[in-house]
Length: 327
Ligand code: ES4
Ligand code: ZN
Image 1: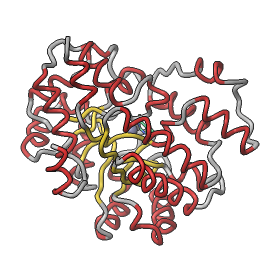
Image 2: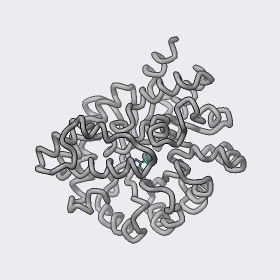
Image 3: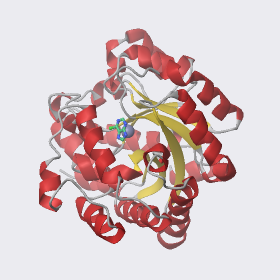
Image 4: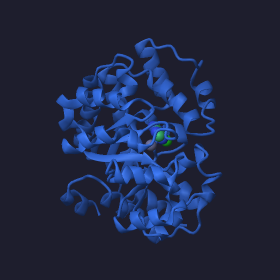
């Protein structure tokens, strides 16, 4: 079977990675020591044992606890450099990286520390590893739209350092419509807009992300298969879905990777991509997602692999000339 080697070696873009979800347990404890932050886990082993998730919320509770060790600009820099080095090793040539500023500003961390640390990591990784990377500020949907507006205000002086905005965290009970006004403002400011939708939430949340937020991509979107009219629209308008198979497996969106609907999405002509979401928590980086998904779904072909890599570039916000060069 040559496909795993082909998948690993293929140049690709990663478009759905939460940088706080790249914090490996070892780095969480190293930063906790460095910063004098107490954690409710005795050590790396105990923390890893807590990674037994039953749904999205059970993961988010631990993910926000892990992010509590990030205090200084250098912490954000170190975290992003570690991810970008790991991604470059997976032949990721371009990454669009989510960060959750509200998780940090709520603890008294300055917005400048967050964005400048991440941005400097992207610049240095480009210079030293040749990997291209940009940042997407993601609003937490379990907080209010006013809180999102305040966050946008804090980011205004640094807006040239981000490529777009997203919407993440607890999906059920927090439909896209809750953020209609702040997303309209972000579009006016010339930012790209994406949103998590249809991870655990119904197809109606994907419709809302498209019609109300004007999302250019849907993060996850796997629940679209339950709505044939939505599937047609996503295919016809070539709205990309940033799919994260190992995440879906770990958060019990599908009973098992062998039951994932990636093949259905591709066969319906959707611009699906494969991504790692929170690689330190879900058991793998992007190449692990490719190899484990192709192993679990024998219906996926070499042509699908080639399509997924091409889709990752088509779906990216990179300059057209860069996309052509990578594809
Ligand atoms: C997330 Cl998997 C997932 N879903 C929603 N929000 C998130 N934030 C970090 N990972
Ligand atoms: Zn995500």
